[in-house]
Length: 188
Image (tube, rainbow, N blue to C red; front, side):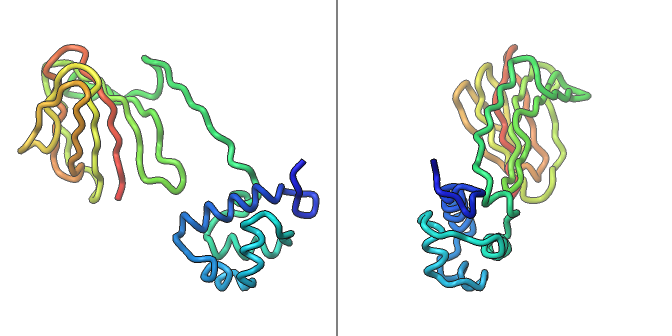
């Protein structure tokens, strides 16, 4: 059994969480300790799993790292999500044979969404510019398509990847039946 902080959260969970969150912020051990008002040696012990933090110390570290208390004391639970082909929240284009299925929305702390794109030949999907700073990444899985900025679309084959600014007018035009791919919308 893992040692605990006053018979509560396991020390290894707190240690792992503190190391993860400090790495996420890019702050040094010294800087986090200073911001939390604790000794550097105390933080070092906590990150190695040998300290015994009080609730006040954990709260001070959470404030210094700008994270909720629960993120430090609860173990991360891997989340397995499966969306079977043909299911998932899907939205269809008004003027093109084009469907967009949300596979993964942007979780807290991340700045991206993942979609499955399905399109058929005919009218292309013409997209108006999205919010400033959006970058779209597409990997074509099957079929053939013209994808990218409207004034410079690129023909893609299965396995091809394209990255382009989503804050300019852009296009997705299926050139073969059964065209589909994965899109990642990255918010910068």
